[in-house]
Image (cartoon, rainbow, N blue to C red; front, side, top):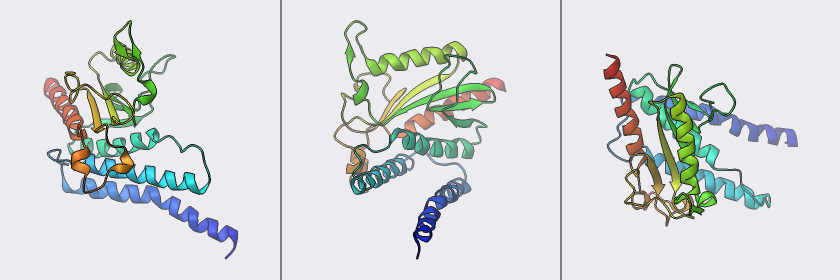
Length: 235
């Protein structure tokens, strides 16, 4: 077999990914409303992220790469995939977008995930794999840098869409101080999927429930509740 034929075989593997994603989506959405009463969304997202990190680590080792590609983009894709499935099966009429500028003007924010109702932003979700890169504490504002940045983005959102909600979703609390349990925004606006003792590659099917701190189901439920309230107002 020629080098080109070997390459074609590898390309076929890559080309199957969108098809497999579409097949998974059709299966997910073919049984009515997706339940948010258990961990049926959090677990798959964590296992998908675990697989991503492990694959990238192997490629990195094989090619002697110093750095792996940012996992944040893949995290956004995984969350968007399941959020879209939930909103579609619950017939909310809302659309999920990624990296879409909220207004076509200079300085407008481009959230990781935005949820739209027609031409209006309903909510945004900023997704981070971890916040260790932005954990500096600002003594003047008495806040961490990540919190200052999030507040600024939330302010920009509200100036354009006063009713829109902003959420912060972090994959793991490992490598930074984590959200404080007494912070009233935790489980309401701030969500961290994994405890600080867990990096995604350490998650297994056996320990996954103990590794989870704030399930993503709580975030999706809040969005559904807000969507239901908005629908009742329009009625």
